[in-house]
Amino acid sequence: MATRESNEQTGGTGRRALLGAAVLGASGSVLALGGTARAAGARHGGRGLKSLPVPTIVGHRGASGYRPEHTLGAYQLALDMGADIVEAGDLVPTRDGHLVCRHEPEIGGTTDVADHPEFAGRRTTKTLDGASVTGWFTEDFTLAELKRLRAVERIPANRPHNTLYNGRWEIPTFEEVLRWQDEQTRRRGKQVWIYPELKHPTYFRGLGLDLEERVAELLRRHGKDDKNAPVILQSFEPTSVERLNKLVDNPLVVLLSGATTRPWDFVETGDPRTVADLVTRRGLREIAGYAQGIGPTLDLVIPRDAAGRLTEPTTLVRDAHRAGLILHPYTLRNENPFLPADFREGTDPDAYGDVFGAYRTYFATGIDGVFTDNPDTGLLAREEFVNG
Image (tube, rainbow, N blue to C red; front, side):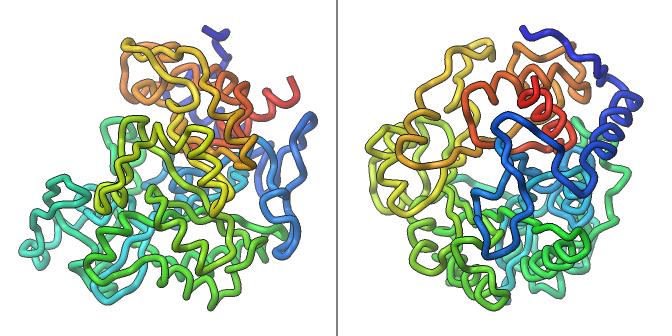
């Protein structure tokens, strides 16, 4: 295992020291990097994806290691920490056709909906991508009704400190995010990037709530639908990304889950291919025909053994680059349970492990960036990796 860094993360003092160091080093700007890092901040209409630093640090659902995810508070903190891109929006629709930002359409674990007796009758069980899910679903609420709810921490067992912020923010709409992006770009004097994901597009298409057309219409309305627009679109369903490719010119990314899984659109159409087929050279060349990148799970880059320890890297990075695709794997988190066993320290589910060692290992594979719940940690890890 890599040498332990000097950031002890088992208590609040370590977290505050790490956060403070990142904000001092990266508040409102990209850290000064040598090596292969590229300068950021190109204006809309400039160099597009090529303007981003490499490795790119993507704030996963904002700075969700410190604030309830998919809130303007989490997005804002990610920018304040210096994230290159903010994953502002896992997009799901309301009953009246608005797009809102939630990790899943089921919102029982990410909002205070259970505390609203007027919505008790909305609790139901649905089949979502083949799985039975019980709770409250965005498509059963109007936007006005959802705006009465407030966001809460999704994984309080791992992030009890985040529960301090429960109830402080409402559910943002995608249009509000686009306006926030413009406001932040003006205030900071540099282009702010976002990386929304279309959630369960086949499921919602079956309900008459097509996501791709709604996303495309909003991007056109806000002038953010060209190839250099600072909005990267992603989905786990390849056919959804193909549909987007016909509607907008934005950079597009196909998300990839475990090797043995099948994208739900493939299941629905009878396509027998799995993710393992998509990450072959042939599969990657096909993806390159309609997308600019892939977002694989980190286990597709370096698999883990039965004990959860990292094994040898696959050829995915090399093969994707040969196909002309960038790779932004997901998701690095500081807490022990989410790290490979090689980098866990102790058994406390809220304690930090040797996450800097994990970053070094993944960066060394040549990935173009990474999604992280802790952008401050990612920026410090990048600085160390690039500058040595």
